[in-house]
Length: 330
Ligand SMILES: [Zn+2]
Image (cartoon, rainbow, N blue to C red; front, side, top):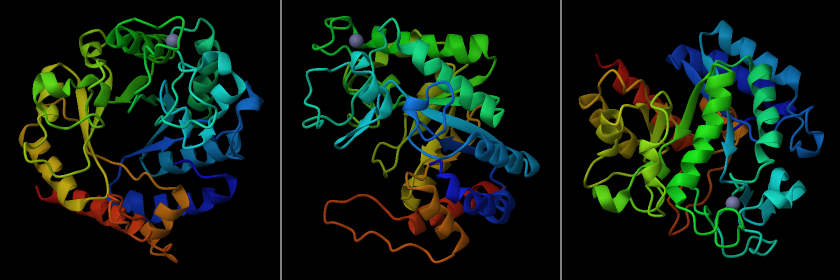
């Protein structure tokens, strides 16, 4: 996750002292609204500046790390009670305006991909991030979109969720790949028909909300990040499936080391030239992750709750190191 302005030196240290020597060659930085946008100052959610972005990009370039900015598109427009700036400032873009303002009863809000003006606001934000990081690839997020073709949206009501999801992907692709000539990355969960394909991933890591038909309606030059964070009795059949569908893909893991190694080993066994790398996610603030990585006053680990499946940043770093060792084996 992108730090604030004050966290940039620590992230640079982690890149130079740890990530680059480990052989990490791509850093995907989730920025979202955490940037001092000039095109839409009202949507700024952080003091991370243009200079900070240039500074980080230069550090990465010096150390042969490709920095790919990420902006969560479509879904993840709120978290718990907080609605993020786009929908807070532009409630007309909200896909589910009927949901109470405190977001009670939902996971995350989505924007409406059929609203005629939403891309006029979002594309300048994406352009600013592309230019600030001088990026040659861009990650559009698009995971865990549960609110889509919502009955409360006058434009999307009654439409096929797969068609609506594909339109959102294709609009972004036209801009990012077609006009800006970058490579586009996205999460894969909404493209996997969990029941139809018998994957057994469930409704988070795969789709049970009728979006998966989009997989045949979007360009094959998108890199799909296929995230699965737990050990699976049936293994990880989506790894082969996405390659068979013609996509380049990256198996994407998290803090659970056993699950990460299981997925990585299966991915390597089934990898074609389309399996282009291993993505180790962190899902923790930059500072906590960097401190754990640098072994520098590691933050207190969250006390595991009985039902919690989350690991702390120290476990996350251990999973990253284990993945690197696995890749060094041959
Ligand atoms: Zn809509």
